[in-house]
Length: 123
Image (cartoon, rainbow, N blue to C red; front, side, top):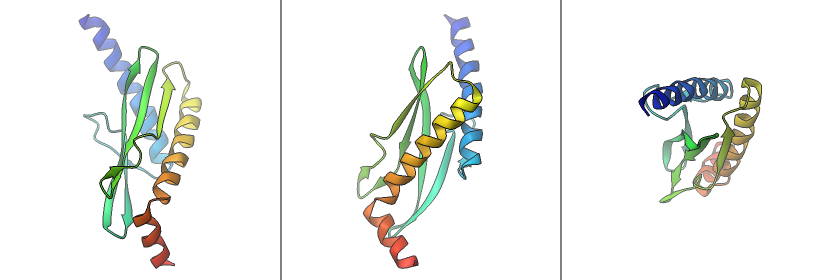
């Protein structure tokens, strides 16, 4: 069991590095290399500046799971915005999937009342 776990860890580190590179290319900041946060992004809202944090975890033996966390008005508005990534994807396909996920994340965040109010004030 230990040998299998070591292989899974190596796979995870490699997959996370590719996901992190894709997110950085899309304007996100790299997360902590020692936990399951590949990237984060600061968002300004009427309530101040907050972080959107993305998490990468194992979904099952064949998939990784990319999820997000952005809490506003007491709710994680990204709780249902997820991306299941097959472990078999090549690097280009990972970048494409991550790009689509980021579009959905930014759309959800852009619809939050405090973010909309802040952005309207800035115009």
